[in-house]
Length: 285
Image (cartoon, rainbow, N blue to C red; front, side, top):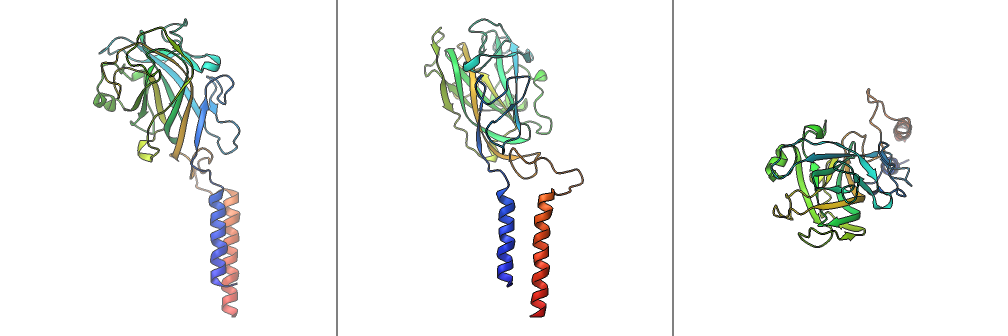
């Protein structure tokens, strides 16, 4: 066996090892009853793919007050609104307050992608009423602990700099009904929007927030109308994993002593055996 042929075999083994790693993929997480996410308090997983093992955990929070208020967020009940998606009961169970809204309480949905660093690329509102504006934020604080929402002060009246100090960055804001500053009872069906956020590691986080609008973002601070929506789905693109061995979604952390997985050991052993055979044949030649 020539050295060139041996190198080709070793390269093939390395490619085979790489092929087992999951691709950095975009996944859609549906919150409607018939979708592919279990409803809280269970966690959500992407169905139909053996390569996606990690979960998306969602939690709701609401803070009561008006502009400039310093009320703290408290845990809010997320409600199953069937095919419309999920709503929230921080400020009432009747329509339209059973949606995620900013009437009375500022309500926000926290998305925890665990060890996956993702970029939120799209979202769909299943039902909405009135102005239907929302904000998308990512956690830029301590990545080892994540956000402590119970110690986060109400975002209304805060500047972008103040939000960053609190550990959050506004990434985009969206007018889902297409009509600016309309405080009406008009209802809308499903609306889908791209967040417009570039899928780069610099824009990623393991924690994201989809909130009723509160005056910070591209829509402007003067937009103070009441917004109501139910979130049907989000789309996330994984760009890396902070707590996994090598890739997004699938690989568990290595054992504490760093012991490789058996399959990896077997392939490495084959490569080493081939190296030994090649050296012996070269010496005999």
